[in-house]
Length: 88
Image (cartoon, rainbow, N blue to C red; front, side, top):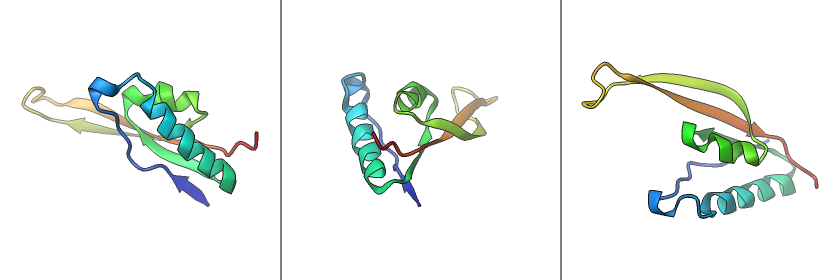
């Protein structure tokens, strides 16, 4: 069994104020109570926060994204992370 922590984001003006940590803490506590692994998909900017909560990289997906700003494309890496339940 696995707890999938769905997409969560914080509006830029509220970042670095603890909202993301509170949401992760809640999700990790629920996974711990059930004794299951937690899974999430991470953007590059969020990796340090997820690692702080014990998530480790399980896989990565690299996608070339072309936009008006980057017509030649830029590489985007999405990281799939997993965390073992903690019984502490």
